[in-house]
Amino acid sequence: MRVRFTHSFDYKPTPQTTVGYLAGMEATVKRECAEQAIAAGKAVEVEPAGKSADGAD
Image (cartoon, rainbow, N blue to C red; front, side):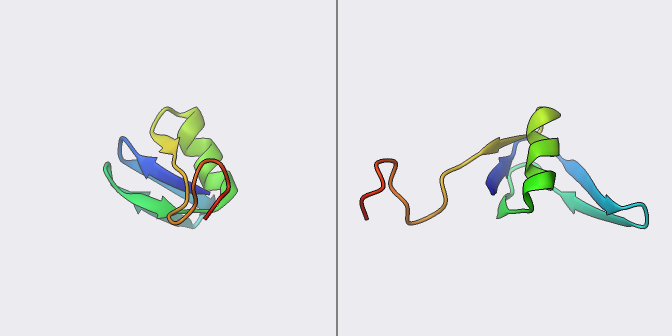
């Protein structure tokens, strides 16, 4: 999923690993990361680059 982080967010895919995302970053991340960040109110989903809303290119 592609998201824009509105606040800094730390994603922990495993107990030994932390991936930090800074406010203002826009990135494609794993669905689990995106869902956690959106649920925490720290990110919003964005349309992937090159795709139009109606599906026409």
